[in-house]
Length: 341
Image (cartoon, rainbow, N blue to C red; front, side, top):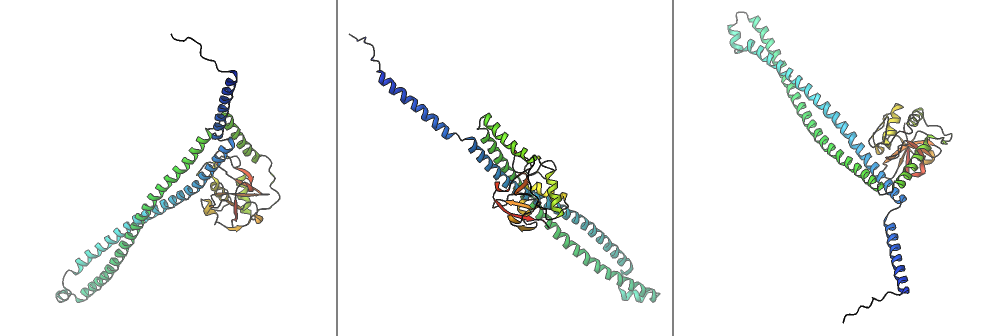
C-alpha cells in the first residue's frame, strides 16, 4: 500500500543557510557585473585616448591632403606646359614646311645646270644665296623641333609619374580618413555604454572646460616675441568657442594645426599644414623661454600643436566635442616650442 505521508519540510536552520547562500550568490554576481562594467572615468579615459589617436591620424591625413593638393597643381601645370609646347611644336613644323616649299620652288634643279642655263648669272647667284640662308634656317628649325620633341616627351613622362603619385595619395587619403572615422565611431560606441545621466555628466564637464576659456584667464604679463606672433595669437583668441572638426582649417571650425596655420595666415605668415611640419617652421625654444604667440608641440610624435598664450596657458583646438579654448600646458606631454621668424 502506497504511503501518503507528507514530504519532510526543511528545518528552519536549513532554510536560513539556503537563503544566506542565495543572497551571497546574488551579491557576488552583482559585484562581478560591476567589475566588468567600466566606470564613467574609465570610459572617459578610453574615449580620450581614442580622440588622441584620431588626432594623430588626422595630422597624417592633413599631410596626405596637402600632398594631394600640391600634386594636383603640379599635374595641372605640366599639362598646360605640354599643351603650350605642342602648339609651339606645330608652329615650328609649319615653318619648316614653308621653308621646304620655298626651297623646292627656288632650287629644284642641279645648281651647276641652273648656272649654265641661266640668262642672268647675277640673278642666279642672288637666288643661290637665298637658298643657302633657307637651308641654314631649315637646319636651325629642325634642331628646335627635335629639342621641343624631347622636352615634350620628358614633360609627358613627368606628368604620368605625378598622376600615378596622385592616384596613390588619394588611396592613402581614403585609408587615413577611414581610420579616423573608425576611432571616432569606437569612441561613440564606448560613450553609448554609459547611462544617460553619466553621458550628461561628461558633457557638462566638457562644457565647463569650454566655458572656462571664455571667462577671465590670467595670462600674465609676458610680451610676444614679435608683432606677427602677437597678431597670430590675437586672431586665435578671436576664435575661442569655435568647434574642433578634424581636417578643418577655419574660419568657423578647426583642428589643432588648422587653428595655428589659420592664425599665422592672419598675421601674413604661411605655415605648413601639419603639426609635424610646423615644428620646423621656426627656431626651437625651451619651455622656460616661451613667449605668447610661440607654437607649442606635444607628444613624442608631435601630433598636437597650439599657441602659447602666457602664464603656463596654451590656446588650442583640443579634440572632437571640444571648442577652441585655453588650457594648462601641463595637461599634455610638452615637447618644445617654436618661434616663427
